[in-house]
Length: 246
Ligand SMILES: [Fe+2]
Image 1 (cartoon, helix red, strand yellow):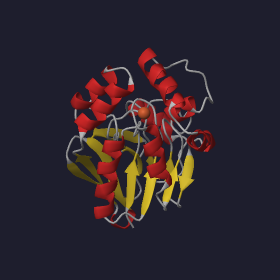
Image 2: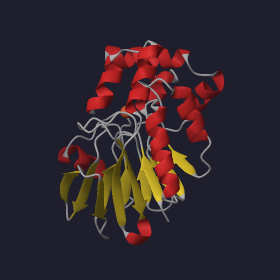
Image 3: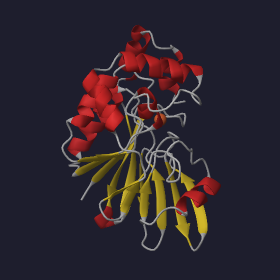
């Protein structure tokens, strides 16, 4: 069994297409998406349509999906993010707005041993940025494996004998062994807006039978995504940041 773990596409169609093409080559059985389909990028509708076309997929909403669907106020978003959310609302079909509105809030249990959440299991908007946050999150988790997104940083946290250890994943095809009797909290990094000073699209493949997860960074047409953002009238900084990965 091979799961594609991916999150934080943020309307970046070019990055998503690169990830899906890669996933097809790798014979993925099931897709697991951790939220934030939209916000920032110029192709929210095409991204949603692509995700809706995947047959075997589990997903939850992200904070930007929720904001675009008008479920909460824009309080807490900086002015650039808020501008992108307002632009996205204006550029989605009613059908795709309904789809965003109906997305479920995490945490959610997928299969028998996986939990998924966007930010943290106790708050979908909370950022897990270090071992203290991860330790708090583990208190809420029953399954051996949890996948999360939101920070846009590829990370593995492990819990063994009450000790939490965090590891930043910097490699291009980095494999991590998932030993039994250890709990893991894993972020695959962001597809459409990486923030670890690496501009390549991030995703991971989880293989439970082999007790391992492999993190990947993939090339995509960054220039095309940037041109679309500038042409759409979105803040230009949203295009600029894609080439530096911030
Ligand atoms: Fe995000």
